[in-house]
Image (cartoon, rainbow, N blue to C red; front, side, top):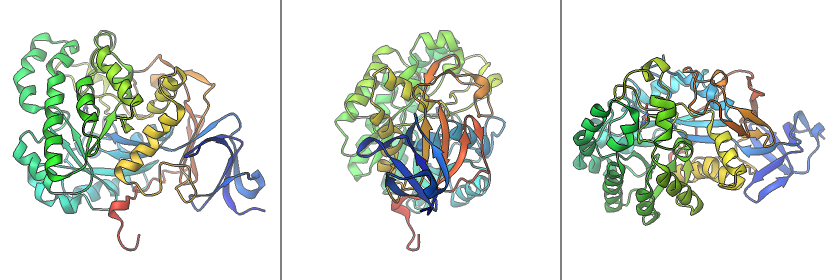
Amino acid sequence: MTGFDLIIHGGHVVTPAGVLAIDIGVKGGKIAAIGQLYPDQGNDAIDATGLFVLPGIIDTQVHFREPGATHKEDLHTGTRAAVLGGVTSVFEMPNTNPLTLTAADLQAKFDLAKGRAWCDHAFFIGGAAENADKLHELERIPGCAGVKVFMGSSTGNLLVEDDPTLERIVRNGTRRMAVHAEDEPRLKERKHIADEAAHPRAHPVWRDETVCLKATQRVVGLARKYGRRVHVLHVTTAEEMEFLAQNKDIVTVEVTPNHLTLVAPDCYEKLGTRAQMNPPVREQRHQNGLWRAIAEGVVDVVGSDHAPHTLEEKAKTYPASPSGMPGVQTTLPLLLTAAYHGKLSLERVVDLLCHGPQRIYQIAGKGRIARGYDADFALVDLQAWRELKDEEMGSKVGWTPFAGSRVCGVPKVTIVRGNVVMRDGELIGKPIGQPVRFAETFSPSS
Ligand code: DOR
């Protein structure tokens, strides 16, 4: 009997019930059956023998630079890098040029993504003084991931440095709000440290622990006052994790592979400004705190904070050099390699990269291998070890801070809503990415 568009058979499937040796039937872009199936039941079949079948990765923090800085990245190249890394959905950040502050700005991004994005996508609306009173409506536009606030200045000029403006933003919305928590007044006070050092090893000294803790405490205080759920992005300090653990009823937490893998001061000596990002990569004691928070369940999500800059831009003398590094393609193998080394389980990798994003952002029909969900998958070979190489990166900037690292679990096949879009490092077919749907913003007919 046929009846399915695609059968994935023979793999170890990571389901909510654990890792099972079962088959998956796909129909109309959705998971239609899970159980024992036969290849001839589908118009097409993928033999996943020896592979692990994971839900497609949902990367909830990427910067794809379009519009405004397409010499670094665009929606086509950013999503190309994504599917090369097993990522089937991305949430893109609003610090583009122009900033994403209005309904028209959001629509412009959806239009630019149409026919050019390899994976599904959502866009954040930036929270700022000029749109604070309209955020309640803006965050409900279908395909909008919610509001993102920068409390400390980074790439671009999206910034909310004072509490009265922050309070207006927190008050004017109900969806979970994503925050870059660095305290701008303290950053300004201490900038001389970076200027005098003229070397990126001073980056975590300038943007110190207190910069982060202070901002996180400010935003969580306001969140509690208004009962607003907040998501603190790229948490870097052991102290914040202690504080966040006391506030888990209202707060969710992201860490990045960069902060889990690179360590100060070595990374700055070895990689120079390539390792420069905001908030900074810190010393071992903080990294230990992040891993502890993963083990204790304080961390909900790993996001890449894919923030590409060209090597020419990175070659400027610190602190004129821009902050950020590419990462959307390397998150999954880095975490699977950490799992191999016993830092976390395979199930926890999937929890952080798939279930966590779905849960905190209320994504409709993604992030689990379950009947009725979108047929988004990453098929990985955990036995195959590879060296990460700059020239294999799909990002326009063509480099990775992890070049030379040996990893397992580089994805072999990526599937977006039943369409195979990547196999063995080659893109297949056309960019068929669509806006991500959210349970909180369904229109009556959707
Ligand atoms: O290092 C960073 N780079 N941190 C951010 O928050 C922004 C990002 C960028 O857009 O380059």
